[in-house]
Length: 127
Image (cartoon, rainbow, N blue to C red; front, side):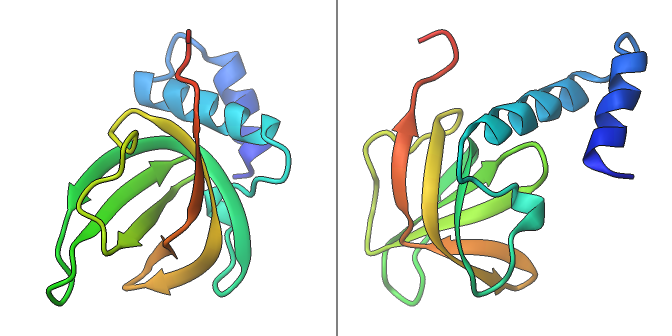
């Protein structure tokens, strides 16, 4: 089912849509408004891309003795992992925060990942 078909189905049955489906639709709509951003579901391996969305989780996870901040970015179409090597924390990188990230997409263990992406924090809704 295409994204537009799914959106039309939700339009016809707004009462039956779950809170999660509603939130996903809002994220997809917000991502579409950001010029130059690619939906996570459309990211191609080994290509540069810009993505935008909301951080679902942020963890400190050492990799081979190197501190690493890992975050999961959700845009309504899917998730991409953002990994900053050599960092213990990054100001502003926290769950619930919106951001735009730019970098090279890699497939790691079946997950889309951006290593050391450039990022721009975005205003939270209502700010």
